[in-house]
Image 1 (cartoon, rainbow, N blue to C red):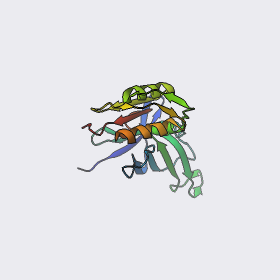
Image 2 (tube, rainbow, N blue to C red; image 1 turned 180 degrees about the vertical axis):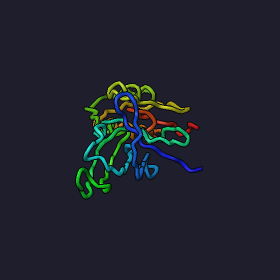
Image 3 (tube, rainbow, N blue to C red; image 1 turned 120 degrees about the vertical axis):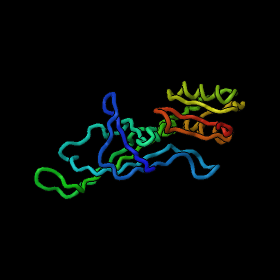
Amino acid sequence: MPQNYQFQYQSGLSYVTASNVQGISITVGRQRQLDQYNASTARIDIRYPTGYASPVAAFVSGTRVIIRNATSNIDMWVGRIKNVQVQYGIPYSGGVGNADRLTITCEGAFAQLGRMQGNEYALTAGTLSAQVFTAASQTGLALNIAGATNPDLSAYTVSGTWGDWFNMAALTTNGRVLDAIAFDSVTLWSPFEV
């Protein structure tokens, strides 16, 4: 069965499905086992024939977006707009030609975590869940763990970013990081989670 994907953006309290979407590209996770996790990203290419005359005001940094499989009605990726680039086509009388294009780049919640400095915060030794809870209270993001294991971790001074610490915790516990399933939320999955 063919799949149909939609790009939706927040406008007020609801979400609007963008028209003229030409392509969607998503990256999640890492390439190799020992690589650092990066924020998941999405790139959406849109033909924008009416953009010059009536631009979409919601296409700005920080707007919440969803990439949804409309066939199964499942959200495949969530995040926020990072940047919008406009490539103008050939103008004609009364508007702009069909060659106008938008490229919207988006990022998952891990990007926010990666920009937050730890400022030498001293995490006390404790279970993974206790340290993740402390990191959540320090960053204001919803940081979670899921899985069957909750190992003890040693004390740690967060001298880089909170994203660096989260990467260290993922590598130490052989966990997986997911940041594109809920807004402003990053989850560390146990390798034993099914």
